[in-house]
Image 1: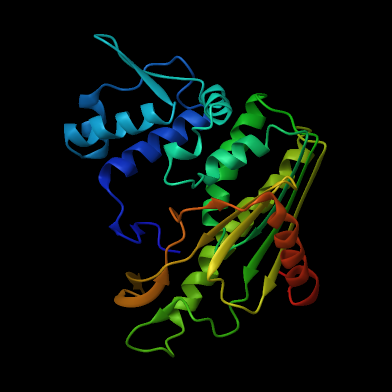
Image 2: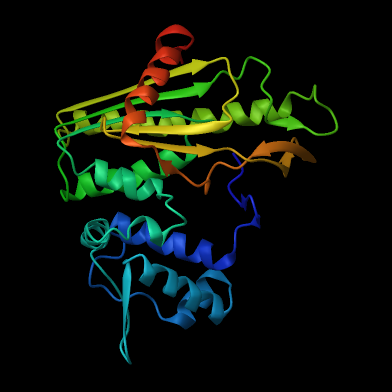
Length: 286
């Protein structure tokens, strides 16, 4: 749920800059071949040091998003072709961390298919929503044109007592759960807007289903197009939040930025069976 931390501490500044630029490239705000703002402009925009900007650019270069031309500047690359080449050379996973995969990359590839199916089990759907938004932009621009999109979202019920989020000093405090409910509701609304694509004629068939299950997710699972299962662990941490004009410390979990790892192919079917068992037996429509 927390979006500004990692298991090793606060997200580093160069990662924040790199992630922001990557989203703009993937979403088409910075087109392939277009020049990125100068280092000085990025320093002003993100309020960071020049060294931080340089490290962010290096990170994007390593992932195939940009390339530097001596004396001319930094230019966006066709990140989709770069990703395909990385997979073909067996280097795609090494650009992230020890075999982990970026959800944005996996969702972008999934939307290249004619029929897109995503089953997601998570806490708030914040990461999924951010990834899908980029693909909606591509659809609207006409870059991709799937025939159908089917999304099933499995989230925890907020009317039951969950292990997290919880006030460290007062476990009975209901405000952390109310905040979780508000966050989840916002991301559910955004994802349900996918169905507008069908009404606009951009995608012939779009279906978004949301169900709630009375358990605390301690890991997240994404089942994508029937052949990829990404699994990530939620790391329990402490987070300081503001609610009702008060600052409180809560037990929270790391969601955005959590590392996702592809399951072996033989476990994809088992993970799908696990998801379906919760969906059909324990979950209720939102």
